Image 1 (cartoon, rainbow, N blue to C red):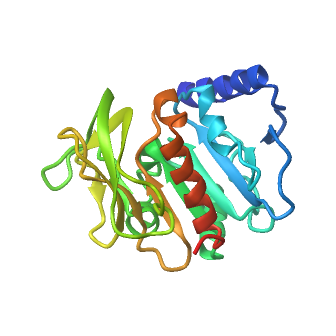
Image 2 (image 1 turned 120 degrees about the horizontal axis):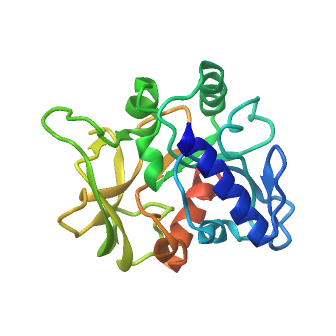
Image 3 (image 1 turned 90 degrees about the vertical axis):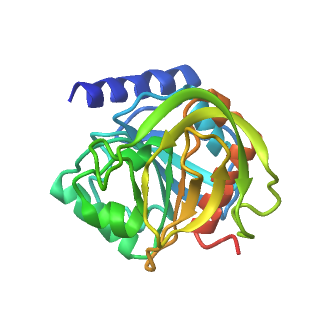
Length: 246
C-alpha cells in the first residue's frame, strides 16, 4: 500500500513540475494533436519513474492521458481509448478492475506493456499466460527465478521484419536488464539483447488473438526514455496496436 501511495504522489509531483493537470485522470498535451490521433491511456503506479517517461508520448499522432493507480481501470474504457500503455507494477488488481481491463482487451483494443509492467498481475494466470505472454518470476518457477541489474549498456537488435521495428537498426542503449523472465514459447520475438545478464528476447508480440498486444522490456529511466530508437519503438507499437500501422 505504501508503494501505491508513494507512486501516486510521485506522479502528481512530476505532473505538477511538467505543467500537467491532476484530476481523476492526468492529462497533458504538450503539442497540438492530429484530428485522428490515437487515444492512449497510460497507466502508472506501484513503481517510481522519471519525468522523462512522458516525453515518449510527445507526438502529434498520440493523444495520451495518464491514469495512475489506485484510480486506474475503474470504468469502461472501450469507447474512450484505442490503446492502453502499461507502465505500472501492481501485483493484483481488484476483481472489478480485472473485469474492466479484460473487457477492453477482449473487445479488440490494443495493449502496449513496458518494462516493469511484466512484473504486475502476478496472481492472474489468464493475463500473463494468454495476454502478455510473459512474467517476471519473483519466486522460483521451473528452476528459474528472475533477476535485474541497473545501468548497463547493451545492443538491441530488431528480429524479423515487423512494422514496429521497420526502419530501426541495431542500437546501443543504457538501461536495466532482466534475466530469466518467463516468456511464452508462443510469442513472436521483436527485439533481442546481446547482454549476458538479460533474456535474449526483450520485445515480443503476444500470442493473444483477440487483440494486438506488445511487450517491450526496455524503459527503466531517462537513459532509455530519451533514446530516439526507444521512443520510435514505443510510438510504433502504439500505432500498430491500434491497427494503424501495417
